Image (tube, rainbow, N blue to C red; front, side, top):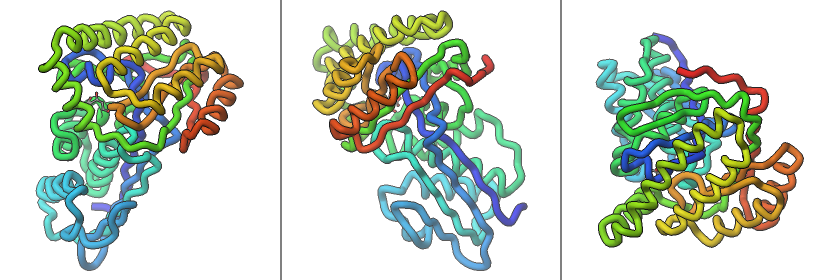
Length: 317
Ligand code: MEV
């Protein structure tokens, strides 16, 4: 066993397929490389403490909204038969919480990796995602698993719940995405319940939207392969219309989408669960992306990021 070990992960952005992924439709999601999480475990002489943005102190005294993390730590200590281990766990996260960027999943992934690194044990992708799911289920109810799959990936992924989780190639796509945080918190569990209730109360309205969002993800995958940015932009804006009809957009997100389009974006949509959180826009180039990001900050975005795929090479796996 090592004296000290770290695990890392990324924030995620859902390019296509949020919400419909819960109902078995495909999704395309991307790790946001500049927004990461690290979990560092250091062995100490006495005690088990955690130091993160929400809590600083003994793990036994962690508050209720960190229950998922606590249960996951217990599970990892059981797994390594190390319940008596003394350690200091430090979690540093650049991921804004409750903004649809997969903050909890990224924390869970970094945590699992840190434990396996400390105990010098190999960790399969399946085991990593199964363990992260323990935390995700407590925090979000019944998540599709897309957040953890993306937070743990080095490349964009094509994902179908319980079926497919594979990396896809973006390197010919020349994509330039702008991500903007509205600064408004949105709870994934509430957004997922809202869509679920819509499906029960108004199936004739909601089910075709879920089907269409899944179809959009499939078409988008082909558009990515063809480097067809115009189609990708159109599909993003169509997704936004469908997600708004499902009730998960907000005034601020609608406004951000409009601003992005006004300043030359090819398409824009909310990303993640909605009811707050972030928007993504597809810019034609870096210069446009900078302008869009500036305009969004002027309109109230608390943070913006630009992620370009021009120079990335990804493998299909
Ligand atoms: C949340 O990041 C994405 C949703 O599709 C929920 C899920 O996939 O579990 C809204």
